[in-house]
Image 1: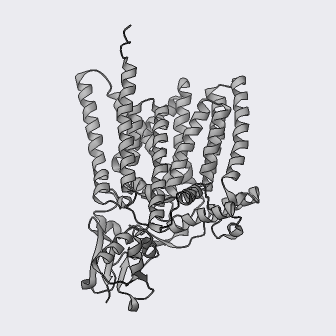
Image 2: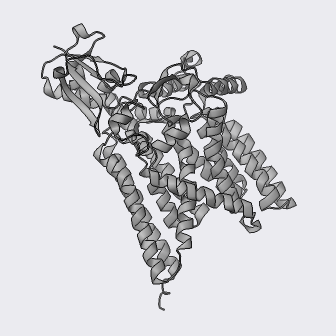
Image 3: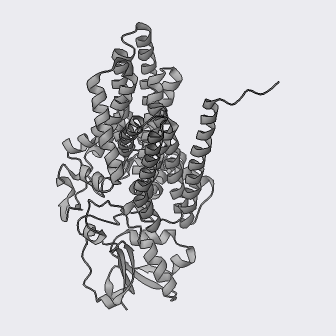
Length: 530
């Protein structure tokens, strides 16, 4: 008996497996390969500390957590990473931080897979879904932070996964899907309490389905009520389970966490548009402008087209598109609601728009609506349509080149990407906005000094804390040679990442022995003092 001839659908699925599978395999290999290249960011010693304190509370009964200054920070990501550290017996700080960078990337990598599935659900086209993943990965600020920013990128990753489980639950309201969604949302909330907006979205769109998608069908309404009740109960259970600080007083501690994290008490200054502005007094356009100048311009163009396509769809009110409209509404709310909240509540923000990185996948989803629309209007089997389609694909590839080129050329400082709207060159941008605010470049500075100066003890003066933190990712023998001091008179070298200091230092330029540049701007300088 002859095997059935392969169908077009079967061939299409095979193409998806080969092309998408190759993309994800290459992404995984690259991520693992470069995870050891990054320095230690300003927050990393503290974020690891959240996991350490929570672990000691759970395993050793240490009550220090209850009086810990950062006890209301979520530990859902940091605790498992510390457990991995303990399980594999890591003792050396270099191995610890490289492992943490790998874990942060792998979680991001998992979220890119879920983003692919989310895009496929919305657009029913694996090519568009894969394009969305490429857009996310070739967004330099997002990809760079995906290794060392276990706060904002872990939250972004968890938000993507939770949004996918929400869509799965809304499309098929079973108890199993409700529980999976509850687990995902609880993990999200227990990374950052702002995640409570996701359950609110779920409730709103469940109501939307009752009215529009299910059209008041009594059986489906009852199913929504039953599974929704299961979701709420499971969510409450897992939020408490995943967050040790809630165990002794679930309701009271949760409300305190919401209150503190909604108005985080930080009164430092932020370099914005050339002025040093107190973080509590930033203008409303801080987030929109930062997003506009640090996102590849092509993505913004597609976003504008996608926004118009979605708006036209809303005005037409196509009855048989209720589910598709629900997708687009969910993505719009994912993008708009958090931005509106921080503007209206005047939340404290700093270090670019990192606190709102998690809205970026929604931005890309709306941009994909623009991409799909442009390809749809060119669809056809005629030679002109095929030529135009090929040209559009080539144009998109060319549009990706500047961001990809920046990431490769300036690795591991891809997060310092700006588009042409930010300034005429990087030196101009440096005078307007902070560059290496994480302090990653201190690692390169320390590596240079250790290679150039063979003395057994080298006294280093760092302008900011990451200077000393980055010693922890160096080999043990090198760390022993470094001694950090607090004044120039006793230091052999002075180094700075220019944080809160965009000008050059009043030191004889002939004493400059090393610098790290991105474009024509120095992001790190080392002076030999003796």
